[in-house]
Amino acid sequence: MIENMKKGEKTKERVLKCAEQAFSKKGYYETQISDIVKMARVAKGTIYQYFENKEDIFTTLLEKYMREWGKIIFLDIKDFMGENPANVYAIDYLRQRLQKTAAFFSENQDRTNIILRMGVGVNEEFDRIIRKFEAKELHVVTHDIKLAQRQGHIPEKLNVELASNAVLGAILRLNYYLFVMHKKSISKTKLEEVTEEGVRLVSNTLQMKYTNN
Image (cartoon, rainbow, N blue to C red; front, side, top):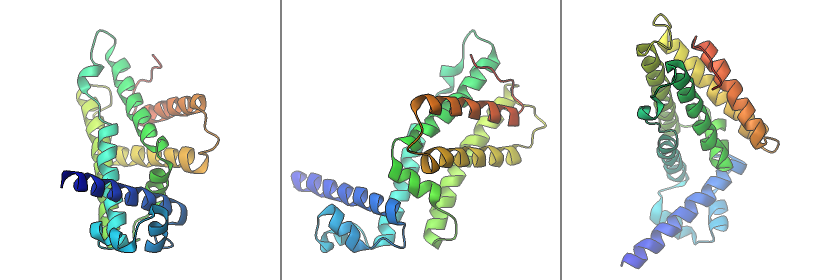
């Protein structure tokens, strides 16, 4: 029974991976269950053992992305304390956030295409999940700004809600530029340069004292 469960989970993961590739290439509406069946090399009935329909597959992928993003961007504030000037740690914290976000989008092109090309209003269920994903991202940005304000790195008078949305919008657009529009031409060195420029721009937006230490 355990072996059957393991085999079943592997089949489900293969279906999800093939669906991810199909949605990335053709988009949600153009992708058919038959496309996924062909790519996964399974019977059509097999897919319905794990998912109700195409929408269920897509929803499962989006929820999976939320969990993966949370794991990748995690930072421990204890790693940003020490004998150096406080602003050095504040900027390095920001730098790590941007680098981890870039890593999330760079390591899986299909996932990146799906997330960054998705717009609200496609489907009520997707809209709910996308808004939840964006709310989670916004919560992280807002948390970081408030933390920096408490530590004196960002002026208290800064409008947190406005700044959070501006920073998140810039980050998502930057990653769209890097990993959707120019995915074939971004070298590791270029990515590091662009990320550092992102640190400079975001720190200026938040009125932080930029340092490249």
